[in-house]
Length: 404
Image (tube, rainbow, N blue to C red; front, top):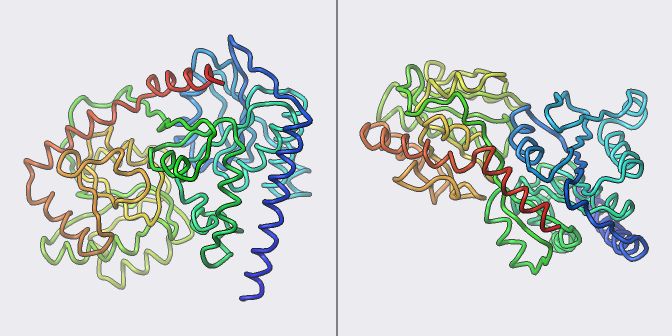
């Protein structure tokens, strides 16, 4: 295992150095085209986990006054909408190369043919890196959506949720420095929260870095929090290790020992679901925890709860949290990533400095025991979320595209 990890580190270092050299070389040989002043075309690629995720990030961009069209290259089942075109690799490409290579190859060929003004990717590994190289080849501006926060490069991408970089096994300062240098080659970086911008600035990245949270649709939402009818707590997200759901379940055990009858809804699916369901049985929480699974209509479940909980080891700026607050839910979250950009302790929820079962249990019980404070926080959460409307984010994108 140690030899395999060592070999992988060597390969990744060579890959990143080669990537940096090629981006530099093509940047010298190929002059970047000036973007159209009236309207620009943006071509993006990424792995999109849900329609809401796509809508939150792409719809505000597509609605910017100076954006003519957004083209998304993906293997996911994504529906087109106004000013957005979806391009899928051909089936034979997927069969021959696999999803990732087929998608990036299509991304490359399409960019060379259509010559967009911006070429970008969601997450650095590997969508952002590929987009940086493609942009340099076709004379476009390169765009990096840093939706995972500093974790996408910290320790060499160890917590980036990229299956290859996770296998390095332990922090690698050399790979981290190479990733930071790669980030510095982009023309435009967009982060969801302030921590990534600060991190890149502290690392002397001189590329333009703007914070755009992603936009949420406020139409049809109630003006005041609805009194929940079933659940005290709700989690919405993928059931993967980084989300810390085992810690949350331990907290529910402790919270129920202090205040029996607490109910949690887990909305989402993922590779850990069967293990988590077994853990619920082992902990005796069958009557306290409901696994909803993947839902096309998360709104209906948010309307049944009063507190949104996250226990993530690492997080950017959670769209699920943003949407929950827009529905009038207070939040209990760890102080990781950019979550404190949204949640303010005793104002619209609680930010935990200590990520432990004890801390979560105490916060849960405190909020549920003080219904007056909880109702006030829920109302404030709803108001705070309105800053992140689609319209506000579209205005931010107009400014970003104008400045390039």
